Image 1 (cartoon, one colour):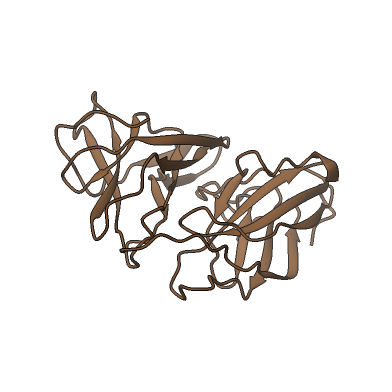
Image 2: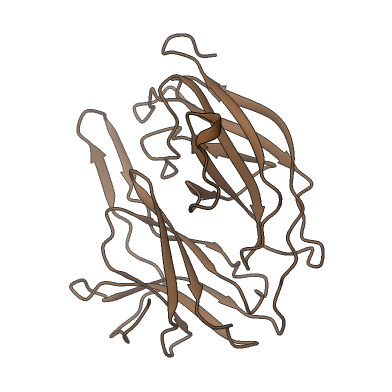
Length: 256
């Protein structure tokens, strides 16, 4: 549960460059990201908060009223190698027409609080599940970097094209894709937390790193077949029926 008040706040953190010693590649260290709710759309009162916290950042994740008290919330983590996808679910409905903020509290750092997301609630809750997306083509890039640069990686990444997912009552709902992964079709436990929450961009979701500077490190095997379970999820955690997708990762040297 989230607790405690804080001493000072900052809306954005300074940029930090990280250099990979074995590569002539300098990257901006990834920062925490609020995936949902959206800052620009009022959120249902029964919303959960979904964020990505890079592993190099230590501290306590907090949901609180804007410049006010902290909200008790249950925390569920889906840890990946370079980041944790975290869901905070308030134990009670959020207040209507109220601004909330999401912060990382770091008592030993200055400033001691990093506020990295805000949103405002609506008057109502949301109990209707979004529709599931239509799954289009999938593209697997086996062991080939997106661009031939010093920051390129030789690990696989993939894109899945999706369309037509929507919330039945709210056209502007903030929809994510919850994705579970397993190397065996019968091995996916969709009652467990998702492997990751992914934000669609340009009608598709991306899995795996395209460069050393890419903070999204969805785990794909070096080769073989991985089975994915995909569901559309709204701010309140309502989710669509689950669909399965198989990705075939070619061995190194056999990619497109």
